[in-house]
Length: 570
Image 1 (cartoon, rainbow, N blue to C red):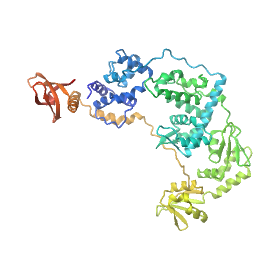
Image 2: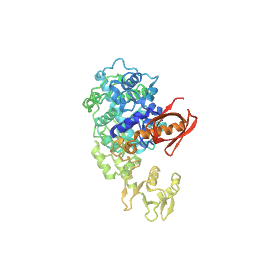
Image 3: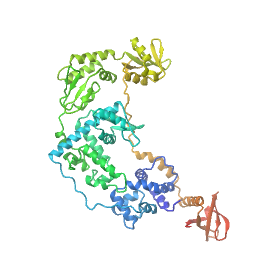
Image 4: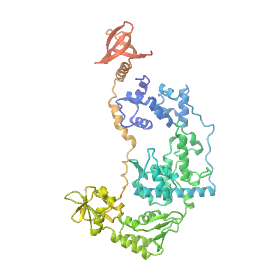
C-alpha cells in the first residue's frame, strides 16, 4: 500500500458525487471496477499504468502546468483542472507517483499563438463547397449501402479491404471511406455493433434531408466531437495550425491531428489552401451553423427525371434526396454526377416490392416524377414483376412450428427442392410444399438471394414487410456518467467515520504481504506510548505478529493498540 494514496483517498471521500463522476469519466474508469472503498480507488488512480493512460489526454497547457508543478513551481491557471483529474493535491503539489510519471517528459509551449485563418477567396470557397457537396453525397451512398449490407470492420474500427474493393467497384473513393464513417458515427448516423458498421434510425431522416441540412448535421457533429486540446473556450476550435501540438504527450496524436485536418477539408470547413470559408466561421466560434453562403455555391436540386425506353432514368441535376432515396429502392443508380442515371431491372423492381411498394404506388411515384411519362417497356416490367411477386409464400406452420414454403407454381417448388444453394436450409417436401426447421426470416432472405419471388406471410395471411438489417434501437437517453452511480454508491457504503483505523489495517496487511519492517507506535494501558521495530510476519484476529528487531523476540500486538505504523526503508 503506497502511503501516497492516503491523501488522495481522503480527497475522494470528501468530493461530491458529481465531482467523482467527472473524474472517473476523465480517467476512463470502468463502471465494473473492482474497488471496494476510496483507498482502492486512490491506489488505482495513482498506479503507473493508470497515469500512463491519463497523461496523453492532457492538453498542451495542462501538460506544461503539470510539468512546472512537478519541478517545484506552481500549476497556474490549470491547477483546478489538474486537481479534478487527481494529478495534484488540493494544495497544488503533484502526488509523488505523478512526479515520477512525468519525469523526463517535456511540454514545449508554442512561442506564438497562430492567428485565425484568413477568409477564403471566391475560388477557394467554391472548391471547398464542391468538396463538401461531394462528401455529403458519398456518405449518403455509403449509408444506403450499409443499410442493405452492414460493413465488416477490422479490429481497429476501419472498413476491411474486401469491403473497400467492392466500394471501389461501385465508384466510391475508398481513400476517404474510413474518415467518412468516423464522421457518420460521430453524427449518430451509423453505429458499430458486433464488429459491423450499421446505419442508425436517425440516418433515415438524414438521408431524406436536403444537402445543406445534411451538411449542417455532419459539420456540427464534427465540431462537437473534437478533442479537448483543439477546442476553444467558446466551444469552437483553435486555429488549425496549432492542432499538431494540442496533446504533446500522446504519441498517436500527430496521426489523429492529420485525420482531423483531412475530415475538416472533406466537410469544407478548411479550404485546400488552408483558408477559412465563410460558412465555417460560426462553427469555429462555437455557435450554430450558418450555411447560407454554402447553399449559394451548391448545385440546385431537381425534382423531376426523364424516363427512357431503354429502362433508364436521367436526372438533369442532383435529385432531391428524399426522391433519390425512394427511386433507388426501385432502380439501381449507374452514375452519380451533376446528372445521375438510374436503371430499372427485374431485380431492382422486385426489391421495391419486398420493401413494401406495390404496382400502383410505383406507377404513381414515377408518374409524378417523370417529365416524359412512363415508357411502355418500364410499365410492362413493373407489371410483370408484380405478377411474379408473391408466387412463393414463406410462413410459419402454427401446429409444428416449422417454416413452410408454398407456391401455386409447382415448378418453383420442384426447383427449390433441388437448388444446391438452398441445401443449408434442409428443405423437406410435405404435401405440395416445403418445410424446414430454419427460421422464417432466414428462409425468406435465402430465397430472395437465390432470386425466387418470395414474400413473408403472417398468421392471418397478410403479407409482411421486413428489413434485412433493421437499424438498432436508439440508445437510452441518459448520461454515460450515470453508469458510474453503482460504483460510487459502493465506495460510499464503505466510507466509515474511522478512516484512520481502516487505513491502518490496510497498511499493516500490505506490510505483512511484503514482509516489511515497521516502525510501530503502541499505546500502553497507562497512557504512555512505546516504539517498536517489527518485521511483520502475519496478521489475523485483530492482531499483528512480528519479530522485534531490538529484543529479537516474536511479539503479537492488538491492532487496536497500534497508534501508527511506518514502513522502514531497507
